[in-house]
Image (cartoon, rainbow, N blue to C red; front, side, top):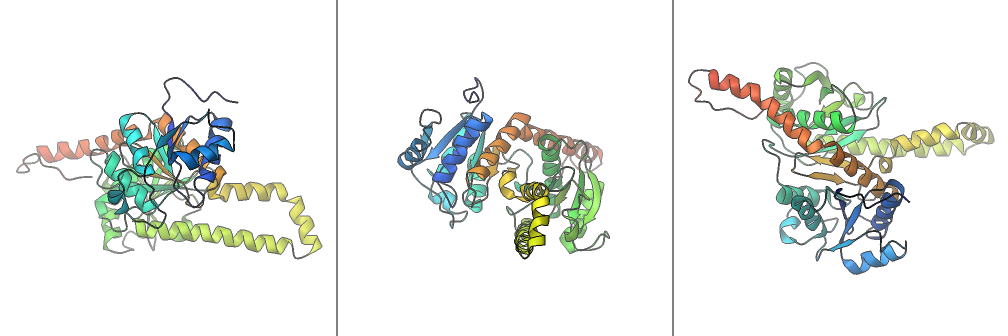
Length: 358
């Protein structure tokens, strides 16, 4: 078994009560992350059910529990974060803020996680709105889509910031040296789209520190035309769920087709290895979930229906992000993006040294 008590490494604070299958599958995922990947974990939640779940894996001595008095239910929205200040996700965020944990992982209510994260961890300096980033299974490297649901309504300047957040994530977590940024809209021409998108296109074209590749259409989301694709949270969430639904539909149809005849079953058997690899690459459980970027701490949002494998993958993602310093990289990027703008504004006559957010 890997050493899980690495000196000086803060554990991942895992919300044991969040998700459709909490706490059993969450605890099972924590055990998998500890034993298979050597990631230190602390489970946050109601001690009795969490301890009982750990006992079934003989892991009570391996993973500590931090008590949380309340739980954010899956159907509760953003306001619940104010009504339940001692929820498991709130306590997990507090551990990160205090330096007792390196990251938060939760499969709970997305709205609750976003609201609690903003309240407890606060936005990084200069960040107008944090955004949810999701890795799309493109080749040869994943593409990053954001915002995937944190902000239904945005301003053009926020889309430029999302481009910086996504680029920092792509550089550090995905090892993409110079990420190309695309803007999701209804046509490739600069004038296509609504007023928000057209203005965002102008700002992205002039933004420093970004490699803007132009507009991206819906059918290009999985074709790797850009490394980072920015949009508002409403559009991004619809696009993401459309992709997930299409993948499920395609595999259901493929499975039924393979089982229709003896020849088809034989062909499926011969292609079994490649089919399994394709399924693994497109399975959300393998990617660890979404990342809430722009806060003073690492927050990973696992799928609400995550089983043990998905929870473990989310912990692996959170540990990698924390180790690679994604939060610090975002801060550096935003500082660099603001600096030329400030210098230009301060040197212009009559501006009194004021500046606008990038």
